[in-house]
Length: 267
Ligand SMILES: NC(=O)c1ccc[n+]([C@@H]2O[C@H](COP(=O)([O-])OP(=O)(O)OC[C@H]3O[C@@H](n4cnc5c(N)ncnc54)[C@H](OP(=O)(O)O)[C@@H]3O)[C@@H](O)[C@H]2O)c1
Image (tube, rainbow, N blue to C red; front, side, top):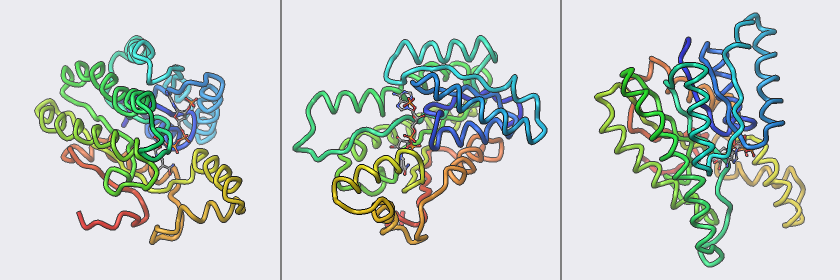
C-alpha cells in the first residue's frame, strides 16, 4: 500500500472511516470524503494522531479531507481534482456512502427511486469515470464498491438497496472484464450486520418504534448470523485493504460477503 493514492468515500464514520484508517496505517496516501466537514476533519485528526502515536509521524502528510456530497457531480469532480493536485494520481477508489432509505415497494415514490439511484449507483459511475483514466495510464488500479448482503439475499423492507445495488454489481463485473488488461481490478464487498453508528441509530429508532430495549433491538440484527455477533468495522477494513493491495492482483469481478455466515446460499 505504500504511497498508493486512495480515495475513500463516506469515511467520516463507520466502515469508510475504518478503511481510511487502515489504508493510512498501511502507508497509503488517503483522501477522506463525507458531507459534514466538521465530522470529517475530526475523524481525520483522530486517525492521524493515533497513527502518529504509533510512531509514524509522516502520516500527517499522507491524509487529506475533502468535504463533498457523492450525489453531486460537481463535488465528485472537485474531490478527484484536489486528489490529483495534491498526490498526482489515483490508484485506489473505495465507493462507499450512506444506505438508501428503507421502505416497501408500495411506499416508495419516483423521487425516492431517483434519489437512491443518484446515491447508490451514479456516485459509483461518476467517480469511476473520473479515476479510470489515471488507473489505465499507470496500468494499475483498484476499485472497491461497498454494497450489502442485500445483493445476494434481499432484505425484506430494503427495496431500494435490494434493487439498485445490483446495478453496481453488474457494472463492476463488466468493468472487471473490460479493464483487466489495464491491471485494474473491480470488486464488491457485501457486508452483513456491522456494528457502526448507522446500526446504532437504526437500533435506537427500532427500539422506540417497537417498544423494546436498545439491546433487544441490537440483538435482532444477529438473529440470522451464525457467528452470533455483528461484524466490526476493522474486520471490514482488513478485507478491503487486502483487496486494495498488491496481494489481490488476481482477484477481480467478485462480490465478497463479510457477514458471519448470514447469507445462506451456497454460491
Ligand atoms: N453497517 C451495516 O451493518 C451495513 C451492512 C450492509 C451494508 N451497509 C452499507 O454500507 C454503507 C456504509 O455503512 P456504515 O454503517 O458504515 O454507514 P454510516 O456509519 O452511516 O457512515 C456513512 C458514511 O458515509 C457518509 N455519507 C453519507 N451520505 C453521503 C453522501 N451523500 N456523500 C458523501 N458521504 C456521505 C457519512 O458522512 P456524512 O453524513 O457527513 O456525509 C459517513 O461518513 C452504507 O451504504 C450502508 O447501507 C452497512
